[in-house]
Length: 444
Image 1 (cartoon, rainbow, N blue to C red):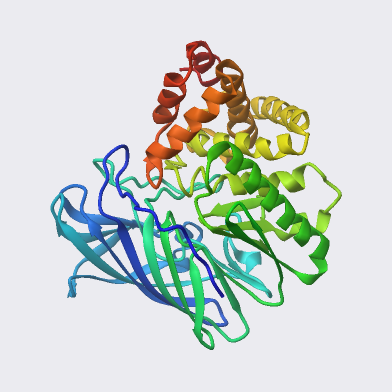
Image 2: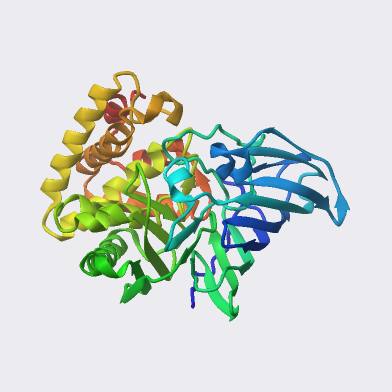
């Protein structure tokens, strides 16, 4: 199987500074019981004086046995490591700013059956899908200190720099690998996966799935789904293709030349985005076409995250609104192209009102931890954030608004941006001050 990502120079640093690319070389084996064992070598350039490195083990948020470090080596020499808590490991690494480094970690874990999986079920296995997302140690970003937030049961936990990946993957017989990189079966059950400028590498194993393909705006799209979901799987492909076309028209060329959409079991969430790969809960395929608004909304939103998250990243824990508001509003371009923008606008208005009733203290720009239990999160951050951006668009006019979004994309491509960066570029591009809108909607 194939996958081709656009080869573009990737940056490592937060903010404006650029650095040499971060690289991951990974080996991973998974057996029929969901046991995984692997090794990862991460290399690049130290952005500060690093006596240690901090890596994240996101699946361990739902059980320490899900993913853990078993050994650590620097330049072939064993070094010490410790975990303050299950999702974070500190590894001895003596590197000064500007120095190249190479850190190797051994790791193992257990991918639980879906019924026992925590969170959204994005690290889980079922009879016809094994979802391996964040299934390896991931280097924390550096911003004068290591960025390592707690993992909450709601929202997106990962904050990561883009990197280049090379993965050698061994899977049980009968499974097909779908990944956010170039995947090639080199021998039965042996795959090579490569990718460039990926904020993370997600892998899904499927069996018995149908696949349909389409090409649009230079992107090859594949839709994987269970045979009984043929109509929904084809609709998913059509919506994804139409969304790409609508977004390219306003935002410019797509970040990647291929995009896979895969139906898997999920809970508590309709879809999850990864660079070059989208997961959508199969229960929504069961409901098609009973909800003609929400079904296409899932795909349009996750496609938009290829621009706002995969390409232009941000701190999804401290400032989730930055990518979620942009992705939600960008999804509205799909509905506008379908002549349904008024419909999606009413949906956002209703969702924001409901979110404010559920959580009277958090705002659009609040961090993830101000939404206990996820209360009001979607309505306030997603729908409220989209309404804020719509107000800004109406103030600026289309040419200035979309010109500013393209400048934001160009300035922070393959990097991590902040809310202040986005607001600066919007304000600079507006002939009329935006101060009152920032205060009304964001409290700034």
